[in-house]
Length: 265
Image (cartoon, rainbow, N blue to C red; front, side, top):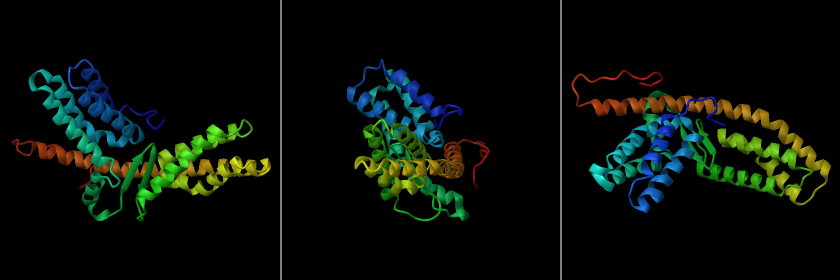
């Protein structure tokens, strides 16, 4: 859904190339299935949740693909080294306070905005203004999502259509901005309790209608916040990629790459 009408990121194409090249290779089961394929699965989910991050993995993915192509020359160790490099970058990015964003604060200089992001299980928690306990909020959002999914499984046929609409709306908002979805936390937990305890139908219906009326507004707020933060993060990634390329070319005479559009000084 989030990648609809967007060009497929190069990183996802590289991942598919790597899977095809890896399939016939005679290497250890542990390295192939439990390191590389599992890591690529995790990375694919991350990119589908947060497409702007794709470019940051392109270099490591290219090197891993090259190592697989050169298996006859460099053997399994060459693949293992590049897989480890990709894993290290992935671990840094999915950590609670993303390393690249901390570097990004230095690049942004005078703006000095707190810019932390956590992505897990299709939930995005982004902080751009004031500090919050991002680990606690992520846990709260995950619990809310799990309760909503369980509610959908247990709701009787009378409430099923409305509950389905509510769950779909909340899951979508969680994927854009978990903090916006958590504004309905109390109402949603009350709804789950009322359905479980078989409260009066009119009270349950009234609460569901109120939640359904709130969802479009919260969706629009979450979408605006997502767009604003993605623009800021994209500027950071462009800048960091530009600096990485300049560092790679530093030893080459007369080598220069112009700053990409959107890169910050």
